[in-house]
Image 1 (tube, rainbow, N blue to C red):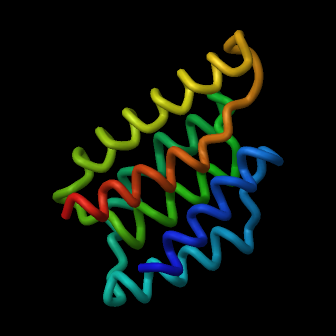
Image 2: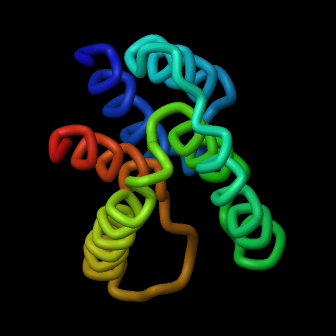
Length: 129
């Protein structure tokens, strides 16, 4: 659990600074989530997330790192029965992050680093279980 929190902080800070989520970071968090989740793979959750994520990647400007990170969390950490809870927390986290970004920049234009919202929403979801 501690390693997941630390890696989540690293991913979040790196994404805020460089607007990138590296493949190595996604791989490491995937391994940690797989180990911490008692070796469960939630294939149905991954399938439910995959379609909208690909559409957002292609047409909505969602970055590839964000897609990979969200898919890793969906496949390895979110049981099917908890999808709505996680998505609710994710929407709230993205809304807060967007509000802070707009307040800091004084405009909505430009990329928003979603890594912090993805990591924070997973950690909040984890602590609510």
